[in-house]
Image 1 (cartoon, one colour):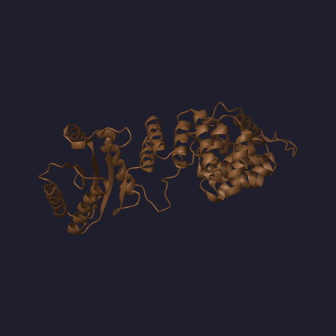
Image 2 (image 1 turned 120 degrees about the horizontal axis):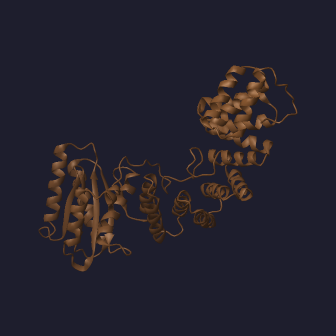
Image 3 (image 1 turned 90 degrees about the vertical axis):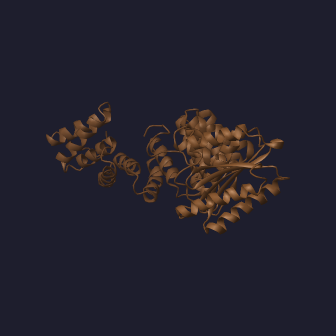
Amino acid sequence: MTPRFASREFHFLKPDSDTSTPIQAPDTYFSDLVHQKTAAFTGFEQRLLSVDIPKEAFVCAVIQIADTASEDTLDKARDIFESWFRSMSDNQRGIWETLDNRTFVLVFWDYDNQKKAMDLLESLKTNITQALKTDLLVGVARFPFQKCSRAEVFGNALKAIDHAAFFGFGHVQHFDGISLNISGDRLYQLGQYDAAIQEYEKGLTLAPKDINLINSLGVCYGVSGDLEKAKACFEAALDTNPKEIMVLYNLGLTCQVLEDTDKAVFFLRKAHGIDDCIFEVELLLGHLLFQAKKWDAALPHLETASQVNAKSSLAFRIMGEIFLEQQEPDPAEAAFNTAVKLNPLDPAALSGYALAMTMKKRNLKIALTFAEKSVVLAPENEKFQDRLNRVQQALHGNDVHDPSQKPA
């Protein structure tokens, strides 16, 4: 295993959202429009920037109609929007536009206070829901807000409806720090780490103690290679909640990459003490103890990891290596057999499997095939080459097994 965050099996822990309600991420994200600059997005953005808004205060809402609605229903929705705006002084109190065939964005102003504004929006939502007999998804943002420009508030409403989508149709969500967490997570998924960092930092201005935002910021710094900043974020998150397993694991992983193994083991053991069935914690802790040659201490963690995630070839491979060190070829062969089945192109598992068979002096031709394949996959690895030599010697009858001999 290489100490890189991009490793296929080792990664930071990151929640989907800061909520205790069962959720499901949306299939599409409206926040993508902010970055893609579609014609519908830029068209409404220009209208919003050019319109004269008294008192420089407005509410922006993005409304989506459930996909169960028919085409006739969608046409009716447009009529309701027109009627609602006509009731507001002949369209002089707002603007609206369609973003797609099921989604509308509207901006309205000239209300006495925020409560009156929300009452107006609720009346529109009620009219549409009752007339169409279908649920709506609504994201809401307001201006002025922080130091956001008009265009940014439009973007905030798009991020708010993404936030609402996690709860499903029928939900109205006002833009907040979690909306920025979700937007940052989306950018993180797209590999746009610098942009994600900016979103998380904005989120922390709204919710400075939000542990998920702090953790997410640390994750982004980590995958971007700024390990000291990542470590500082995770330490700050622990100050907020010293028993957060997600953060303890991430801090342990960061310490591992910074080659501070003792601290890494310390934090991972704390996480293990809180919950001893977290795959990532058990796998990384077992791996670090294996590297420290603490075989007996490592095995229980690796066994737990393999039980929690039976598809982890790495857990079985490391167990196989430990059994080789302990001169136990039978369990080593079984562990490597599982590892190779899960990942046939893992040179370490292939090489270990070949050595286990050689130690048992059986299936030597198969062992030779595996050993040769491991060298082809990792030609610079001297250990794999030494094991290949040992298999070749065994095939020619030159390998005299010495139980005290350490495996190559």
